[in-house]
Amino acid sequence: MHESNTVDRRAMGLCKVILHCTIAALMAGCDSRRDNEIYLIPAGHVGPVLIVYNDSSGVPEEYENGWRVYRIGVNGVLRSRFRLTYGTSKEKFFYIEPGGHREELHTIWRPTEKGDEETIYVYDEIVGTHAVVAPKNGHMVLGPDASPKEGAINFEKFIVGRVRDAESLNRIADRLADSVAWSYREFVR
Image (cartoon, rainbow, N blue to C red; front, top):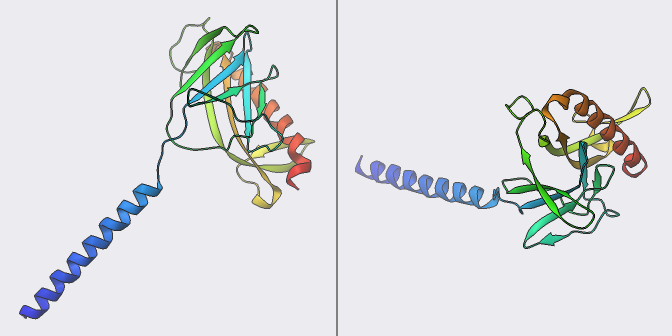
């Protein structure tokens, strides 16, 4: 009986060591930090912003004091060579004048949050990988249910605008995403 107790304790001790090592290895591999990010949006832009990641013909990577910099085009789209990363980071959104002057934009999680009716906010940020789905009624669409063999693009989408315009700006954002997905149709097949 004494020998069985000793074996049970040793086995239990070994199980604890294995469990702790497994948890430590998992935690080390799950670093949820990513680069901090600066978004430079053309002054006066109101509407959706769409960033497509991992685009080999996109804008080269740019850093400012260790922060990733995304220079959004006048059409609200940026095709970037940056790889999409997940995790926590600091983000700063700015309107940028042609001369380089920046005005910081405030962010809210959803347009249902209380906010000043006239203030321009950044909201409804979505980051992910979506497959490019075959045309439906003549539209290429981004969708989470498509087969990976149909191809995929990594993207980030958010709205710059007034809270009261959220519904119409989201419809415009969907059309913009369709348009960008359509342009990738030839590359993902």
